[in-house]
Amino acid sequence: MKPEARRLVDRLWNYCNVLRDDGVSSLEYLEQLSFLVFLKMAAEKEIADKDLCDEQRRPVLPDAEEWQGRGWPELLELSGEQLEETYTQLLADLGKEDEGRKSTLGLIFYRARNRIQNAANLRRLIVDLIEKEDWLQSSKDIKGDAYEALIARSAEDTKAGAGQYFTPRVLIESIVRCMRPTPEDTITDPACGTGGFLLAAHSHIVDTYGEEMSVEESARFDEGAIWGTELVPATARLAAMNLLLHGIGRPDGKPLIHVEDALAKPPAEKASLVLANPPFGKKSSIVITHVDGTLSREDMSYHRKDFWETTTNKQFNFVQHIASLLADSGRAAVVLPDNVLFEGGRGTTIRRELLKRFNLHTMLRLPAGIFYAGGVKANVLFFDSASPRRSEDEPPHTQQLWVYDLRTGNRFTLKQNPLLPGHLEQFEKQVFGVGECEVIAEAVARRKPGGRLQVFDGAKLAASKEVNLDIGLIEPDDKDAAEAKSLSELTLALSADLRDALLQLEELAADLDVKLPPLLREEA
Image (tube, rainbow, N blue to C red; front, side, top):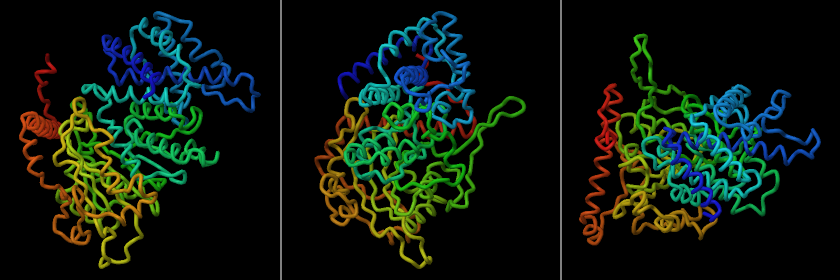
């Protein structure tokens, strides 16, 4: 990160610490920051466009007469209770202007609320921090990277942060290097969180093809060739603002983040590249409020004709949805937890259909300790679309499944021993030919098993009773085994297992509508 971006991050994050004393969580702070930065950028654009004729001007805020002078200028002039009331009303009015969320403005301000109840702190945020930065003209490497760094820091706030929506940037960038997005691609993430995969894919395209890209090719991504879907409106705001600050999309253009349940219906548009890390929770459920005021949870099944099986398992539903999202010659890379590899019942059928209908050519077994959700053991599945099978007797499209084990002998933590780009370098080179082959097919053809990389027969896997894909973990050598017995490794292993057990217990309690007592450290 550039020094100027780091300076901006430190300034903004220090203020987040001040607002915590007012009960504003880091995620709520990011949301308020998004509102105010958007308003500041709108004011900067209006000044920049003042010499243009009416036909050339594209105002960001509503252009009606009653909106003249509103927005950022009115906030700068006020303080105290009047500032708080004006800001609250401004958010409400902007939300009403585009309740259908047909523009980026409508998406960001839909049902927006003021969470900063201390007017003095609100004024400091406006006057001392945001007003002093040039958001519209400054480099996207500064404002965009700074905003993304704030999201990363928010993810560390385990009680109210963005951790559940955040995939480590090191992993995202590695996956994108392997997938090699191009200017011709249409790219989506059906569980986009704060937009990390979309940003990395766009950045890779610009860095690789920037000088060769035409104006039309660049404009494609502002007009919908890259898009994400997010269920939670507050998180969708962060994603929309994240893209905007990285120079993707337009404030007055159509939103590139769709706020909806991606699983609810078949996709209206297909993509040539799908990148995703769906939520780790197993159950798809809704909370029902009964007449007597009590609450209960009801598991949801998605009855879709394009799904191979109907299930309440959210992860298996995302596997099926992503498969349906792929265009002809499309390709996908999806982060999924271990249970997807071996869970029985309908999971067996879904794995078998994936092997038969698609080319599941690669799986990366990830180490523990790289996600904010503690105890998660996950994998990256890489698969490509294929032509429809003519009969059940036809061999599966997955001829070979290559599995790379990054897990055995490796254990990471988020702070003391984080996952770094170097840890994935050998996987990228050996499996996808990153830095050696321009075409993925060429890299696949050159693969040779050895070390952490093994290959399995796709037809045998598809024909097996359980279609167990919990495979490819190597046996540690004597040195690895000795290291694993160290006190620190055993402590980390025990911690991960306990966290995993606690997550499962919390899911069970939620299913049974049982309220668990708070942890002792939370009471303290």
